[in-house]
Length: 133
Ligand code: THU
Image (cartoon, rainbow, N blue to C red; front, side, top):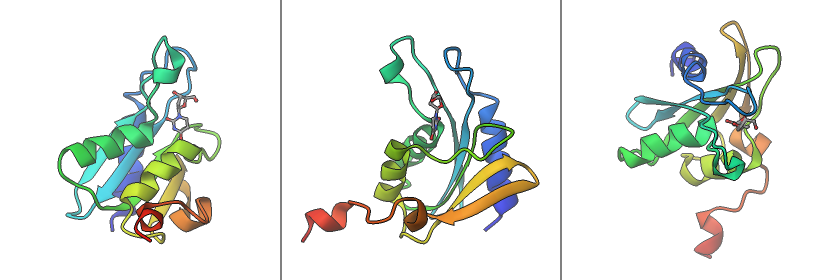
């Protein structure tokens, strides 16, 4: 896995953010099963609740192109801190993650990022396994 490509993907995607209300720009990049990468940014709306987060933009782009197995996620928001995925995005990542061990890369800048597993940031997740029992 080329972590640098994911990190750069998230940073470049952030430049496309549409965040006129919060001014808080977020970028994300997801690695899927065939090793292609999908990028996304947050897209806000005058009706605030219609806003879409960067992670979900990237995941929905991947899924809508036929990729339903995510191997890694990178996300970047605050250039001076570590911006973790919101709760809704953690749930959406869990829906498509290959397993709970996939890396979630929290990017401050190109040289400074931390990695957690999905299970670490969303312990005890509710997923399709719970519906099949
Ligand atoms: N945001 C994301 O894009 N991803 C997250 O995980 C956290 C929040 C966006 C949504 C909104 O456009 C802005 O950050 C402020 O909440």
